[in-house]
Length: 346
Image (cartoon, rainbow, N blue to C red; front, side, top):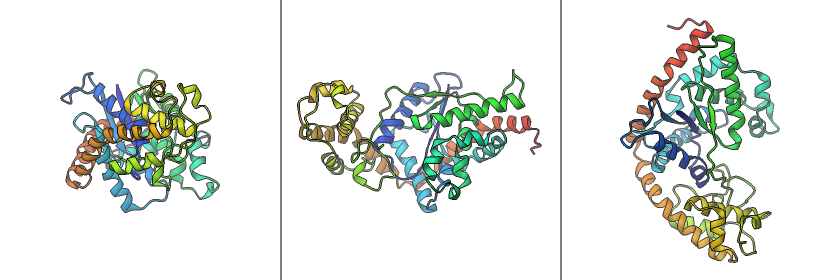
């Protein structure tokens, strides 16, 4: 089992990232790797990367991207990603990602890319003014996982379409250029963890918590201290009604559902279990309790993050070691791809 997943190094890691993805990365890492970093299963490993090449598909500040890459590395390690158990690196240090994207561009089809909903969402009304990189972003995503012969890719609802594209590209490439018994690419399977929480904005329970939201009060950031977490939860949007005793009673109450979901996710309880404790009570009771469990859960992560974030030497070393391992893992696939296409490579 080889798991591959990435995250864009733009802005700070927030509660939605942690509960929706990163915590599950840590679980997968610990399930696959032994306590000493050796793999429980021969060939099994996790590769997690900072998607800095993806970040340049949109307008960006180069200095902020460089700083964000190092900050996100510190955040992932603080959350539990262990560079001795997993391979942690940034795309830019592994040129094979961009190289394979170009090699796969002859197989990907315009019609497939035209159906990608994220391009439509991100380009908005100015599709003609969007970068080519934004349009071909899903081909780079395909290269990200196919390069390493990923067997499994953790995906949220918004990424399922891109993984399906990666499978389509792999299948077509194998069919066009390989024999049936010697395909180049493994078709990756999605992992959609049942426990992955969908965390919404603290200001709007119908919108995902996002680092692109201009309001800092909409999210809990990894670097927020106890006072800031408490303040944000206290001011989080709610409603005037008491909490129901079961989840069905939260229908049509997105902000209430979000706060209960966060409490359940951070404590490992079910939403119904949370409501069995707080049903019939108001948000004046739930919010202080939620703030307390969040502060307790984030305290060790925040402390480790603050310790790491300014240690440029350690962060550079982590990424360099990870990139060296990633380059070695991807070399054979890249060679096979060149050979299958009939390209002469020195």
